[in-house]
Structures are given as C-alpha cells and as structure tokens.
Length: 69
Image (spheres, rainbow, N blue to C red):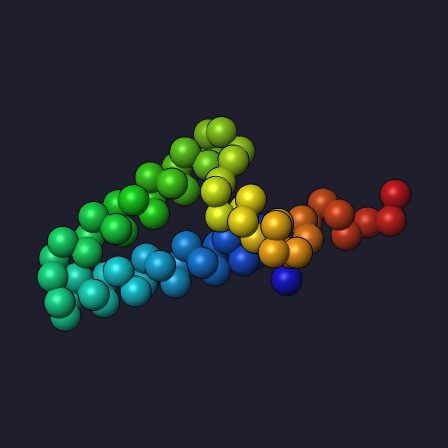
C-alpha cells in the first residue's frame, strides 16, 4: 500500500468514525470531523500532511517511487 492510499483510507475512516460517534454519543464529535476536513484542505494547498510524514517513517512507500528510473 502506498502512502497516498493509506492517507485517504485513514481520513475516510476517521471521518466515518467521528460521524458515528456524533450520532450515538455526542454532537461535539463533529469538531473532529471538521479538524480532519481542515487538515485535508491545508494539505491540498501546502502539499504537506502530518499523516504522510508518519506513514513514511513507518515504511510505506510513495506512489512516485514505484518506477525503476
């Protein structure tokens, strides 16, 4: 799995989880959903995401490193 796919999977999982928590526990969990959305927005502008840095440190490869040359 590449870093880019893992980030999308992580973001989707966090959003769906926070929506479930907001529905069943407290509406305040929607603030977490907003945080994830803001992080996705800033990463699209700056091309930097904390989750990508962490996943690269854990050994996931980037999509652009698939080629041989």
